[in-house]
Amino acid sequence: MKRILFPTDFSPTATNAFVHALEFAKMVQGELILLHTFELPVYDSQFFPQNYMVLYESLELSQFDMFKEEIPKLRAIAAQRNLDGIKMTHRLMEGGLVYAIEKAIKEDQIDYVVMGTEGGSTGWTSFFSETNTANVLTNIEVPLLSVPSEAVYKPIDTIGFTTRFRKKDKKALKKVLKIAKFAGAEVKCLYVQTSESDVDKTTIQKWEEDFKDEAVSFFVVPSDEIKASILDFIAYKEVDVLTMLTYKRGFFEGIMNPSLTKKFSKTFEIPILSIAIKA
Picture: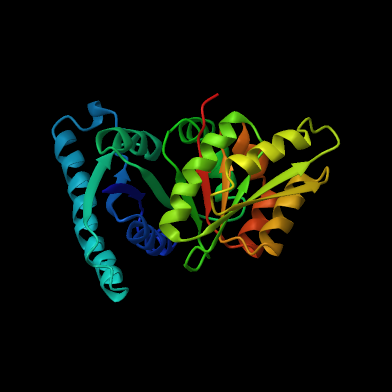
């Protein structure tokens, strides 16, 4: 059974993403591991010589009580969608979000991560461009499905896949095709051929031959406006989920800049599937 990690802070954004996580779990016949993290403040113990541990214990208890109150709400959402049969377990961890995600992936043998993200300059941009966060999430070896706050769930019929026809891209495409088979979806691959592109027709034809028996099609768009071409592709091909590879350092800083993020989040409210491929 596939294991899906769902980090949540119980915010509206996270609650919306929970619906996607539930449906994703149903699609891949998996189970959900709900993760909530909290960080304890740092105090100078010399000012709290007697009540130091009591203070921390009370803070931990308040987090636990909040956790207990929120979980039934999520279970109610699952029941409303007739998905209460999906197995759900819970983890409450002290520490930073990135640390907790990395730890949970290893300890719980996670196959996928699904989480909500805010649009605009305080959402995708700040989250993914933060140095430590970007480094961790571009190195984890499981697919990450990021769900914008306004993305309404709908069945996945078309998965977009950006490629440069490299060996590492082929590995990623095979992972995406596995997900597509679960969903009964087709994959549409986009290659933006710039004036400096070095991919020849023979390479493209070889890919088409290699994947001829799969539900995948390839589109080559001549343009030097890569990001704009991606946005057009999402619109014209009615892409439900966009896949992007995260092997390139600084990937998130480039693709999730404030102006582009705004276009994604306000115009194309679709999840982004990030797949890390090591060089």
